[in-house]
Length: 159
Figure 1 (spheres, rainbow, N blue to C red):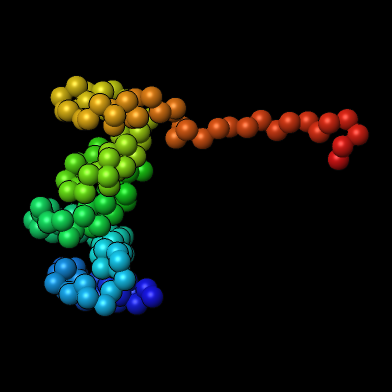
Figure 2: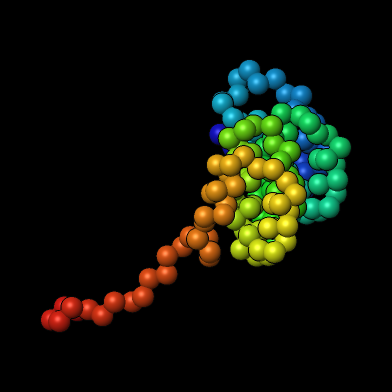
């Protein structure tokens, strides 16, 4: 288990990166566990994004649309969400799998709204999102929804 992902990561790190992803796409799924090829594509593409994000994204955009590359598209979005949530939104919109698209749009939208509310609002005014996704983004608490707990004093007689 995990061998295919290891091969993908090493191939991307030491050899021709596009050919690693193309090889995985061409692979027959007989004998593979469910999701194994998608996991390997995600792991290989994640490595490529760490090494050279510009060439990884440039190559990926030339390969779309391709449902087999949804794992790579999702990785591009995940990788960009913390620093470039607007670009992550663009990648999320390219996802073919509806549930993954929903998840990635909400994640990137929340981050973008938090990081640059004016730019996000302007984008939202110009672009349509399903109402459920729009509401999840707009009603999310600032700060990623993490509760900040104040330390409570110990009860009397308690350590």
